[in-house]
Each structure stands twice: as structure tokens, then as C-alpha cells.
Length: 634
Image (cartoon, rainbow, N blue to C red):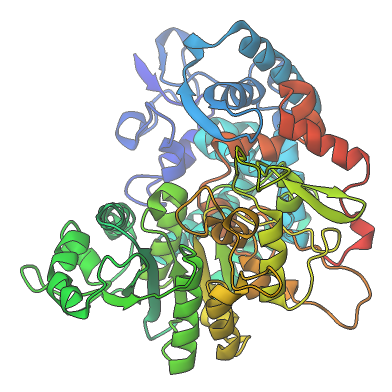
């Protein structure tokens, strides 16, 4: 009995063609159960199969009414997406935050009803077809615009590659073009190999009349994009990369060690020749007196090196010290102390590093501003994309000046998926054009039983004045960013402002007199002006999480020549047309709680899930609470 992997003879010949490499066309074998060894060479009766002698590994996905070529829908996606959005994770209805993992078998009847309603909604309102991928790819190559549906369908095509190639060869080849382009920002050598694959596949498809000539469809701009990426100049000298991490406790040391091992331990899988194209330096800022005495810091340097670097393979350690050899001394971290009148957590440490490095002329080409537990706040695929690109030399250093690395932001997304939701509108009220109470804040902070949340309106207005030198306007300053303050910033972005700018901000965010706001006194009111629920002024961290792009990104700087307000909401990674494709889809797509914010509007979330945040934002949108697109500079 012959073993059949696909039912299309032409697809078979492409997948098993060793002209692509000794293991054939690798995309064909992504689906479980398929491999070059099991499927190739093709069965001897490929052109005239006897149905009585067939044993098929993978049944055709598109049958009957669904088998309509490039009009075929990915008919299983609405149900799979609805399950992902409805189950697997429980949500806090007020904040949308992940609570606990919950399996389908334990789902309540109400959740099942929600899943059914959501499946129906997605099926009726979302175009999940090959044709949508073709149109979306054309839009991407023309304008850079990219939506969640395109990224999702692209993944489905690559997962079911052989059947997709049979069903709609043009859409499938476009998916390979985009996947290859995304890899150029992480692994240039492997991406060049895939570029050769897709050129050959396109040529074979044209000859077999499976697709039109490239000049008649989107293959032509896709080919031009790959040609451009292959000609992109590569730096000769290694990139300097600073890892800046505030440190407060032994728990932080352990978390940082785990994060380094998770993000750097597997980088040997990146296709590259030695040596690394990046030189990493670890800067630790002691913000809690862990290493208060200089003598103690010296004595702990070796212990810190062992704790932080001891779990890394030799190849990863050569990122910090190119001359490192197994058995040799471990790299050392640079340790600095931070003295603050009013402790701020990460903010003063980040600003202090940028101030000192820019003043001394030692600013790295790329600076990563990270928490010790950064691996909990940045998805593994994003870490792979960033560290892999930096280490292999594929990093698009001339194209990326700033990047939020954290996985979460307020939602649902705005401006057709291009912008995050407003932090101010999601967490605070605006009354007659003035900033009112923020979520969790008591109406009277001096009450004996007052309970305090994370968002303090008084602190925001004070920080805005200290940072930008003007009063906060809740209408025009409607900003939003990503959570967690895990950041990548280039030397160019930092040097757009003078060192004095960074020194001044590093001082005022933690200086005592910045918070002595009662006239005629030297008194700081923790309840009114700070974050009384914490042992440090955590509110500074919370507000700054969503403001960093305003300090680093040129497009958010005020334009005195324009009389129109600037939209201060950060771009989503997926929706930011200025980012290379690898940073938009090469890392992880929105997941868990974020996924619903990309697939569903506030109105849709309110109607289907009845969650508080979705309903409140839907009401705000209906009342015109957001800027109209024609009123803002984008």
C-alpha cells in the first residue's frame, strides 16, 4: 500500500524536490505526522493513483462546499479562536487581567454559550480566507498596513502548507514571502536560504500555471522586498548592547539569572558564524541598598557573576566576553548605586543610566531597560527575536529607535489596530475637561479607612509637569503605552535630547521637593501625592510605563508648525508600519487576554462578554470620547 501525504501530484513534486535542499521544501513538513523521510520520494503511482491502495497521512482540509480555491475559508478558525478567547484563561471582568488557567472541560454553561455566540460572530463578521490574505498582503506591500487576521491566516497557511499550496498557490507563496522577510531581522543566513526557496517555488508555480506571472500580482513587490533585504548593508563592527537592570533583593538576582538563561541559553540555534555580532554589558543598579557598602559590592562581585552567569553555556557567555573560554573566569556585571529621596523603583535607575552614559560618551548602540524578572513580562518569542537579531548581526539597527517589549497594553486596540487604547481613559474619569478620579482612588484620600489603587491622578499631573514642563491636559494629552517598562532604545533616540534633559528628569522624579506640594511646608503627603499602598512611590513606575515613547520617539514630539493635536497613544507592534516585519509578526502575536483586544472592538466585547472595561470604552466611543481620526496628527 502506497503512503500518501498529499493528494496533489504537483505539490508532491515540489515538497520532495531535493533542489530545495537534501530534505526537500521544508515548509511542507511543518504539519505533525509529515516528514521528508515518511513522504518522499513520491509514491510510484503518483500520477495514476489506485484509491484501493492509498494510505493517506493527512486528509485534505478543504472538501465539498469549502473547496473553492482562493475563495476557500479557513472554516475551522472561528471555532478555534472562540475557544481561545473564551476558555483557557479566566479574566477579571473589571480589568481584563489574567487570573487562572481554566480548561474547557470545567467550563460553565455560560462560558459555553459565550463561545458559541463568539464562534457565530467571527464566522459572520471576519473574513478568514485565502482571498483575505491576498488582499492583506497587497495592502502590506503598498502601505505597510497589517491586521491581526492577516498574521493569523499566514500562520494557518504555513501550518497546512501542502494543502494550502494546492488550494491557493498565490496566497501560499505570499505567506512564504512574508515569513522569509520576517526572518531577515533575526537570522539573515537562514532567511537568505528561504528566499532562494520561495524564488524557485514561484518559478515552478508559474511554469505549472498554478500562479500568474509575478508582474500581474503581489509577487513582484514581494520579490523586490527580498532583494532589498539581501542588499541591506551589515555592520562590520559588533553592536554594543547595554542591559540595564534595577536590583533590589536576592529574589531579583535569582529572577535575572533565570531570565538570562531563558533568553540567551538557546541562541546557538541561530544560523551564524563566529564571532557574535553584539557585545553585551550588564549594568546593575542597586535601588534598595542590597550592595550599599562599596566593600561589600566588591566582595559580592564574584558571587553575583556565579549566580547570574553560572547557568549560561560558553557560547552565550561570549556575548559578554568574546575571549571567554570554558573554565575561565566569568564575566562581571557593572554595579551602580542609586540614592533617592523618594524611591521610584525602575524609573530613576533607567533615567540615571541614560544621563550618565550620554554625558560620558559611553552610550551603547542599543540599550535594553529591563526588570530583573523581565522573562515574565516579555514573551519568549520576542526575546528570541531581539537577542537573536542582535547576536547574529541581523538586527535592523538603522530602522528601530524604540520598542516596547512587554506583552500587555490597554485595549481594545484603536485606529484600525494601529494604536493601543488610552491609559488615561481606561483608568481615570474626565469631568468637564478636567482629570477626575482614577481607578482605585478614594474620593477623600485623608479618610481613616481610605483604600488606594495604583493610579493616582494627582501624581500623574505632577509627573507630567515635571517631565514635560507644562500642565497635563486630559483631552489633548490622551496618552497610552505598554505595561511593565521593558524597553529597547537606540543611541540615536537618547541623543535627540541633551544629557542635561536626562539628568534633570532622573533627579526630579525622586527628589523630595518635587512632592512637597502643600504651600509653605516641607511635608510630603503620601496619601494625596504618592502611592500609599506600596513601600515606594510605585505610581511613578505605573504612569511612566505608558509614557516612555513620548520621551524617545521622534514622531511624538510636538510640531510647532501644526495647529493640530498629536495622538499620544503608542502604536501596537503589529500595527506600526515603521517597524520591520520581523518585529511585528516574527515575535509572538497578541495572546491570552490581549488576543480579544485585537479581534474584537469595545462594542463587540461588551455585547459578547459583558465585561466592564469593554462596555465602558464602548460607551466612551459612542459619546465621542476619543479623538476623531481627521482631528489628529498620525
